[in-house]
Image 1 (cartoon, rainbow, N blue to C red):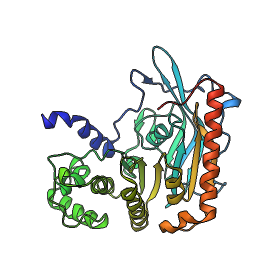
Image 2: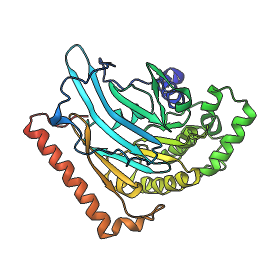
Image 3: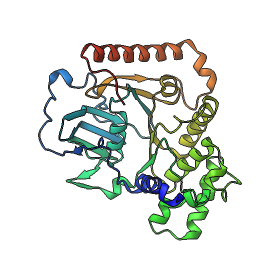
Length: 327
């Protein structure tokens, strides 16, 4: 019975390393077309372009990306005209209203769903070639979900080594790599433990280690600490800074917490809802890694308040249009 109940966890864990999850809403199908989606007119184009200056190299790049979901009943333009370049070893956070397309954008970056129009490039390689993902680009990507999605009957070291197992790496190498990463994320002594013996924060450490198991240069994270209590979340934010620095990873993280977004990021990208487009890009001046005390500084709070006001304005706009806010 336990194994049947965790079928979804198996699928998610495999998706984190192979890229096979579809993010379309239930009952919807994802359309890939050559023309601009209906409704992508001047009034819904991105307010801000996040393209890097000419001549500056991007580790990750979205060029004119839009995403249209279609079902029998309606069409939903989730994202439109997204242009964003992210530098090597940069830490970028995505924030916005629920339903603004943050997770859709992250999964487009991960190659889990294909954009309707536009292009995604990873280290200057197209992520998609027609309807086929580029394997070399995919190997640069590690993905962490909000749910750790660990196999309950696998030990910590076996969960960490799962992507390597799927790639045919022998058991001895998998265990050596699992122990290296266990030490990196602070799980020494727990390598033989089962997920049920771990706290929520420790399970997320396993998920991060699993995503790093095959040495990706880019870490994509979808609200990885959203289910944790406040104190554990603060601790994991400190740990994530350390891990990102140690691995020299480029990180893109989705969060609903504005304070978390500002604390972690070099730049905060705010998406405006319905359809999702870049409303603002806010540089964060403090060098990384940061201590929690930075959150008490006036400049930090000013940045948080400014982003919160932008979200309130967006919510009021949706209310005037009679759309409301949805997940």
